[in-house]
Length: 362
Image (cartoon, rainbow, N blue to C red; front, side):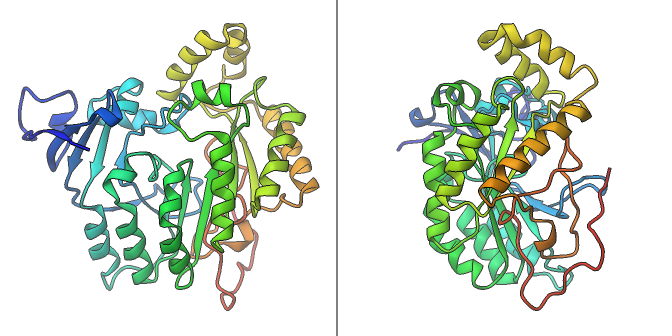
């Protein structure tokens, strides 16, 4: 594959939108294999990101090798973050991808510091580390190595089948440190998936990924998320998906309703108007109060997913299994939801369980 390159200076006034705010920009590249996509390669000063104290996430640190995502999920809550770079949260999020080419070496220095406490590091909670570009850049092997060598527990959440490439490395890491692996799969309908998540692997491919992860001896929790009101929230739809997840060997399942933050909200409603205009008014009513679904709907949906998952012995969350110092329950948009079992690094056998129930941050 030949990459056409354009070297840009970060202070170039004629640079593309957002370039003036991309510290450490080395070059921007395009390739026919990724039609319409520009990759902006940068040298990052840091790799570890501290999670804000008010976040419901059950970890304190993240690593994001990419900003923007070619998966193109119309509902992605991370879309708003692209506007911080002077890109838009719509097409630019899908097509202007920032690549931190030195993230592995920077991370190794950070986790090698005597001050590093070996706390759980999560990946895939903003943009997907195994989006298609990872097949070219190969950033994750060095990241995994840095975390495992330093004794740092970590987790990965992805829709990307590129993860299969690193299964031997992840299995080896799992013998040294607690490792959690999560896959996101919200539906089985390939036609709906092709418009809702146009750059993602098919549902069948992700089911196969779950099998490969389990065959490698690793846990695999699955997020049935986001569940879309009136589109994918029916009991029969959820049961059909959970049945296939159980057959694939998933260690846990969690279902979460659609959460529409600014940035994602506008892009999603544009998609809904094009594909299901009959639902636009119903969605406006559901989300009239903000980004979250109404509490009654969330409660009913959570109960439905919990009952169906229990039919297949997949109802347990990861709350009681967490490694590290931050066993917090809840996700954005649903304080009662939890990460599925297997998706977060579990405590070692000799590490005591938390003495009290995990608190919520809402």
